[in-house]
Length: 259
Length: 222
Ligand SMILES: Nc1ncnc2c1ncn2[C@@H]1O[C@H](COP(=O)(O)OP(=O)(O)O)[C@@H](O)[C@H]1O
Ligand SMILES: [Mg+2]
Picture (cartoon, each protein chain N blue to C red):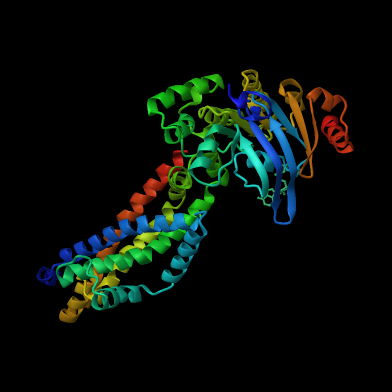
């Protein structure tokens, strides 16, 4: 019987949270964009991050896979502190899927090539196996028939679904979405949200920055409301929408829900 | 009228020009790409080296560089680049000089091409777990090359014409033969000029046409 299983030593055997940020601060020059952020996201949780423009939502998202290094504090993914730049960081990023507002598909590669690149070059999966998996994923997001086209030939909604398939092809432990529907024409928002909802239903750990309140209500387990670089509210969607605690959140909801 | 040509090896001289151009072009593309990689690298020392190199070498007259290869490298430091005769040594030194010089223009063209590739794509690639070198090689450079085929064509055409500078260190390329013929055939100077001017046009025109076609094809494919 090891001591780890009992009492104070128990932390090492308990499953760590998927994401843990402790006392994280980030500055852009003099601008303090993340202020003492403390959050833990357990595995399987779907967190929606809300907040006005410029409140630090994207920066928080990007800090989680170190696309944006932070100035102090620690960030851990699945119990591992983020490594400094280099091979170890690349390995961690491979486990963290990211979906961007602007899709960011590789313009000179076909859709299926976009999806197979990571598995082949990073995971060292064979080309044929990667292709099989890619086609399954494209099927799942509903664009298998577009596999051999180039990104510019697809609609925004299709491109974003391809970007989600590209991220999923790495078999990530967690998925980050930074305003995935904000660059889409209104009629294409739903198809992307549906893809995300089914991912949430399958138990994926997700951090989603979005202004889609419907998605937040339906799919999220938890809402973080940010303002001026701080997490101002941390609650369930039900509580947040029906009973926001702070004036800033009330003000934000008032603006969002009235138009 | 063109009888005088039979006494000279004009084709042979142009063949040397072609060789100078092809070897220098290959070397410049490789070294220029490496320089461009340095200039966008996250490592400050590399960026500083790339910037200093380009800004220095680009501003030195080519003639000086070629003479420096011969005087400095060979005659002072005895770097012969494994050439066993003075002819092959000078030929190789000239190529080295052209590569050192032309690569700065390749680098700057490429760098403007790199700037046309949206940063988001590089970020997405990094987010997949690709390293800096992989992102550059697989995502950024292929797109950068496509967008600068036009400017690179100009660089290669300029290189073809610049190879005439190799005559200053005695490489027997086309313009050296031309100078010789001008002295010996002073009665047909006009024809001599025309012959060599045509020769260069014949060399450079296909380059432009070929790369123009490549550019068109690359533009369609995305
Ligand atoms: N690369 C950057 N350099 C300087 N300031 C930045 C940079 N990225 C974001 N910012 C600033 O940091 C703040 C937070 O930005 P961001 O995280 O993008 O907010 P949000 O996603 O909530 O709109 C903003 O004031 C923004 O202008
Ligand atoms: Mg943002």
